[in-house]
Length: 249
Ligand code: NDP
Image (cartoon, rainbow, N blue to C red; front, side, top):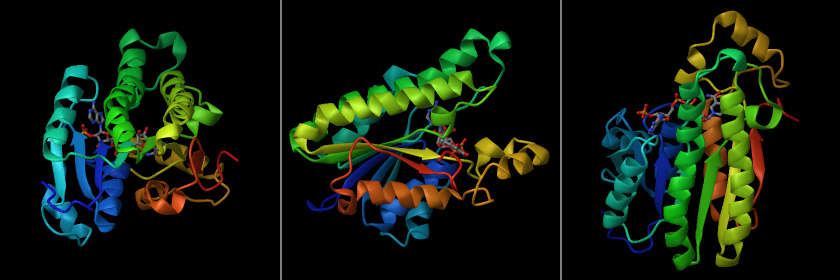
């Protein structure tokens, strides 16, 4: 529990691995206390503090299934029992269930929308109340270039990620009067468990669509998130920042 009144507090969904873990580490590095919500802890929270060269006890894992509204409510209540303020909310948890639409099962559509879009709605609904009453705060939602460009075989994922963009712009307008900023990061092709499943030839063909000619690293997304969460981005709200090596320009 934070005892320093000036220390900032953050909630990150899906911080157990991949991009989310790097986001947790980059916020810890800024001296921010972080609660990360996922179904598994991944590396122990104190290991993340060590990696960030932050004091131990600054990171906290909270078990949460973003597909389950009751679990999200319980996890956020657990966090709010430990910190009276939330300066940063990052909605990063996301899944894919790819398939062509003609063969897509209802569950593949519903699971992806539930975790990627409804999950963000649930956290934003609860935490925007906290931020509005603080009259400060910043929210970053992790979308994807697929939400901008579309991608065959990912109608469900693209719908969830495009939905996040419209959702975030609307929320930015709702909360601006309370000095709460809301922005979106749209990563391109980033090396994580999510993209590990692709065969090498698919990766090579994807690389040809990236002007910078390489797959991105999760730390490169995390740095952009840390920037949008910082006071350096104090006049930026309602924006979509692509971190994609130029893929979606
Ligand atoms: P990973 O599959 O590596 O990690 C996904 C994270 O989300 C994990 O921490 C996982 O935790 C969490 N998560 C998944 N389902 C749930 C759930 N039901 N409840 C709680 N947490 C959940 O993905 P990435 O790091 O690659 O992706 C992170 C975000 O970035 C996602 O939103 C993704 O769509 C987006 N993105 C990724 C790109 C890429 O190329 N990698 C490109 C564009 C966007 P756990 O399993 O422990 O619950």
